[in-house]
Image (cartoon, rainbow, N blue to C red; front, side):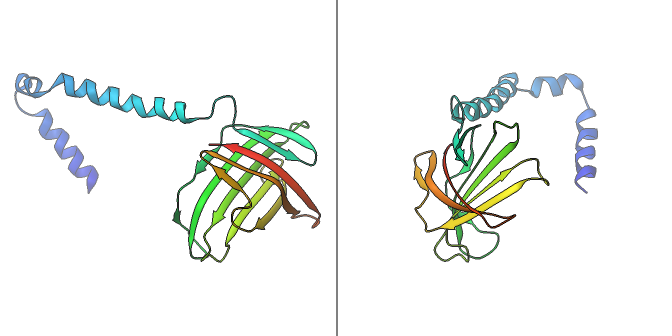
Length: 171
């Protein structure tokens, strides 16, 4: 239905006096739209953290993380009720060349998953070793656009062993 409307509009635009159609176009407005479209890209690049996205200390190894992908405002939770109060993700590469991903989510008090949740995956997707843990809301610090924690407890999905991670994600 939309395609028919668009093609009908294009057909109508193609009919008539070409000179009249050109006279009706405001070239300045077209140029303004183009320059406005370019500005948000520049803003997004400026919002990316300079010099990297932070670090993760996992099993004694400090791993540099790339720029964080964050949403630090409340949003509805897709499951478990309540709200997601903040979320941040980042990734890097460890000394062995393995991909490392960290994900933080803070769930509201009325959520089934209330509190701070952190997961770390090491290795290629589908073949990774995973760790996950939850703690009380506020265990992970959110200071402006920086999300961080020290000695956050995680448990291995594979063998149940426990580790603690320290991380900083710059959003």
